[in-house]
Length: 161
Image 1 (cartoon, one colour):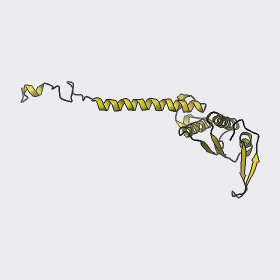
Image 2: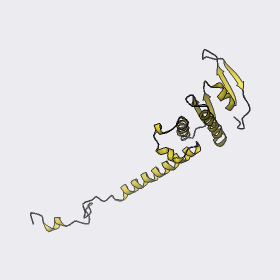
Image 3: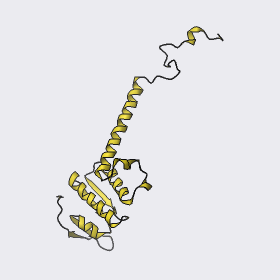
Image 4: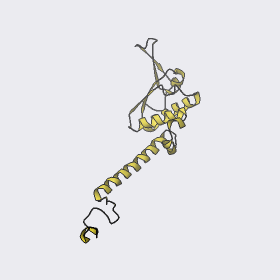
């Protein structure tokens, strides 16, 4: 038998190898794999929930940035920020690269998030007419970028600060 004894030619039941030569996973790796699958499922559900919260469909998660419009990119950025469940959302020039309709849509989204989630939203922008139309309180810096701040009260919002 070419130097192979019958006892080594047949598979043993205590061997970690199966008769086909593949390794058995065992219980611990199976549990780890199940945990990874569970985490992946929960992550997918969370991503879908966040995208829906900002007015996008869960299908947007599979898209590359170049496949999204400017407004959609900003919404994805807001969804990413919401993942941390913040109390304050700081938006620096969130509408600067958007057309007027997309910018207004983002501002309406932020207003809705304030209402639904009780967020405080801080906007940094050069577009004072847009911001003043959506903000409760508007603070402007003088021309040098230093204090003093000038406070402007805007129309009351349905959301208390």
